Image 1 (cartoon, one colour):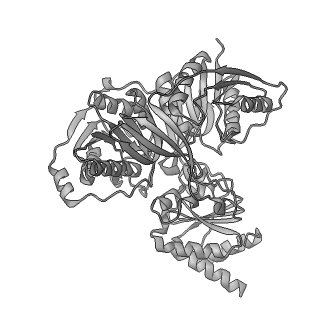
Image 2 (cartoon, rainbow over the protein chains, first blue to last red):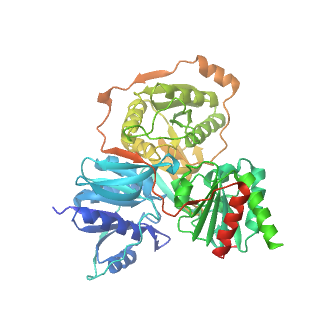
Length: 326
Length: 258
């Protein structure tokens, strides 16, 4: 049977999530080293249109599996369906998004399929005839290269790591529609809830000044606010740990589980730069980082690095700015 | 009710992490101090909150790791866990998540836990796999990235909210026993109390020495670790504080960002 690379498409609220096209890009890179066809699998209660959208854009074969119980994502149903469907496809590699959905079902699915599993993949390359995957460890201070002993391999791909695939679609692609019914027995999805506040202040700002654990205490947020006030259309944001400490509202959080931002200028103050945070701000126009630790991971994605204590540096910067305006 | 919490020992987050000589994992330097994985602290706190809400609940803490990992089991007891289990492995540096999950599954199987909690991921390896793999090995339902939970003892179910992205939560109900991986921010982890720490000091942990036969062969392996590539120029500003401030201002002006 033909081996394949399989992409599990992700969708939300009736729309394909951008990471789906990044997964296709990742699959195309894998295909350079393993010349086997790519198939896309999409699951949901009504996903025929989305399947056609992918097939049309990519020219690939898309397998749409409809289950009336999949009104929203359910990990148990995903594992049950994929646990049965994937072996039929003889996958060498299964590309899944490193998101609240993909990361939820991928490790369990790997156990079920006897597959290797590598989460949070940011890059891949070939060495000694084997595909190797690079992912961040230690909050992004280091990266580790992983390789696998045998097929299949499940990877979850960090959003923003691969550039959206572009296809010269010579073919129209095809959609195979299947309908199944796997009722979940151990879990029951009760729907998606929207948090009270929206994060639009953060996502729509031209300049985002973001505070990390390095601010030390809540009172120091005042410095961050003063810095943000220097810029028109600016917003104060924060890392996960700052929001966990309730120093900032949850709707101010930037990162994988918070808002994704791409302002003209992003200033990361006291942010170590865990990959989850970077996933939410890496596409910003210009990035300035202020951190006492010269090895902080945030500096790897920054245009300008300031190795300083933010509580000392920012007031000096504000003063310099006010002086030059006077 | 019986709860198992899985905790991991990790280096302090501000520890200067260096690669080992063959670049296979980090150098286990004497200077590195260790602590409980931050996300596991939220899991321990959540289990202690459940224990407080449902008297008679028993909380066991388990950790898989080298001899020094016993410290985090003691800390969990200090935070309010009743018993501690240490599955002792050699100091191999990197432990594959499937192996860890299998060792915990080996302990948890047949012990009738109603709930198994762990942090969403470890701060060092950052896989986020042990929880969902453990659930699969034990054929239990699983929810990851849990930011809210509420147990209904009469129906033996647990209602959870999973944090997904940008302010959305996925709500679901799981049948107990179940495995939850806990997201940061669900609660405010307490400091160990003095009386509990004294108890932890004298309490004997259940120590299980993991033999190589207990472990499935790893399906993936770490080839090497390295320092990350820079994705941008990363110009480092030199000089004194005032010089750096002036330089930054000049750059932002040139780019018409200020």
